[in-house]
Image 1 (cartoon, rainbow, N blue to C red):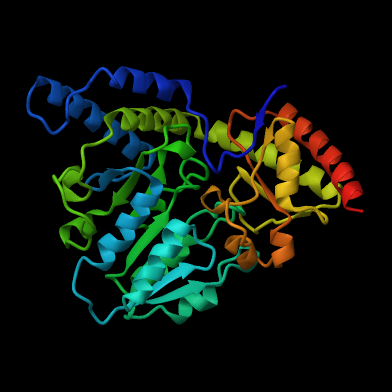
Image 2: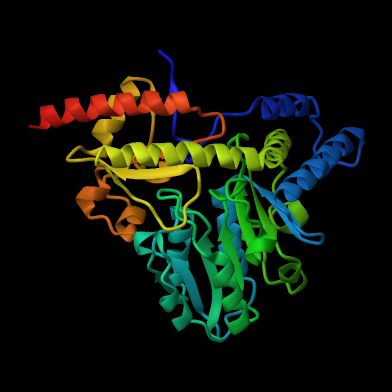
Length: 385
């Protein structure tokens, strides 16, 4: 049975280039903080990897790129590192969306308990409510922490417009983009978004799990507007202590180089795959949950009277992997907060599936998926009756 993997928003397969880079890096066992020959070799590899990931992210000269253990940790460093950098000032309002990834949403819940006022901007239909944003554009605004691309619906939020307006209203405001689903998918960079901080993850771009990175704008570093949220040996320029995962970082850099080099071709391919899938699903009378602007690799749709987990199991038994929501909350019984924010009812959210492509997926795989979906619809609706 040929397996079809359509859950690339959860994680991607390790690319041959990343695997080879990691295998080579495994021979460089020295600690990159050591000053002898073995440490210097690892440090040189780390430096080159940082340059390569920074280049793929369009990091301007002078910006910091800090390696972390995940996109989740990068988000946490961005949030807590800025919130606790200085004693509380008159600014205490934080803007976010009502459909954030848990690694942002839950950490902002903690800040709310610490006295910050967190405003969750509605995203119904995948559209960010700019009227709500404008309501809080004043000197009380402390920070904006928002995702660039929603991991469940593929909605692209207008961060460029939001960040520009926020900086104009409150020049010291911190603007953070969770770029995990956007990185090498839609072409946005910290510079194009006007972001002070941007988080990315290796395993979403065919790199290894356990590696992420955070871009930090020079002005935040100069003003000491971000601090580490735990202390240790002072690695990563003091922002993230702990011996760097050199092997994983080497794989991250290889995946980033490859993804950057073929970005335009990959984007066009993903757009073609998703366009065909959307057309086929619509022709079958299925509801496709389409935001007005969406990333090319994510398609979310709602099934008729079939729980998403039931269809997921049906497809999985036939060697096809899709998702019923974020992998970070897939074992929970509660409906997806992102889909509820999109405007789906609880029953609709509980009957929705996400297909997420990568550049290696093919049109033939879309055909096979649709055939299996048709079989599932026929079989499972008949059983339900």
